[in-house]
Image (cartoon, rainbow, N blue to C red; front, side, top):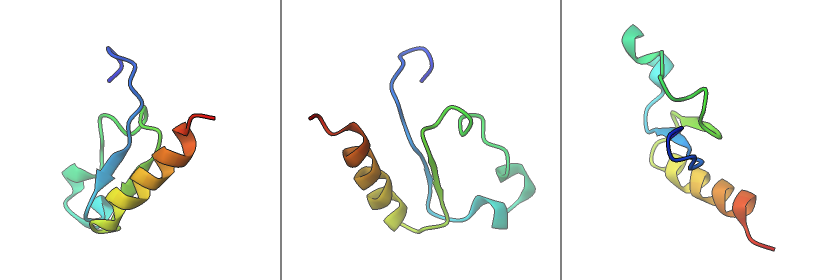
Amino acid sequence: MLGVNIPFYEIHISDVFAREEFRHKSLISDIAINVFSGLGVEGYEKALLEAISKFKRS
């Protein structure tokens, strides 16, 4: 991700903070554009819609 300079979103179907402790620390969330967690599969749609609006060419 940093090596190729491609913006990305981190998406988790379940709420990682409601799960085991080892899942609470992400190695990539600090460089992600946004993190969607605990929204079920709707998190994918929300991330896609945000990306479309954010990176829409004028």
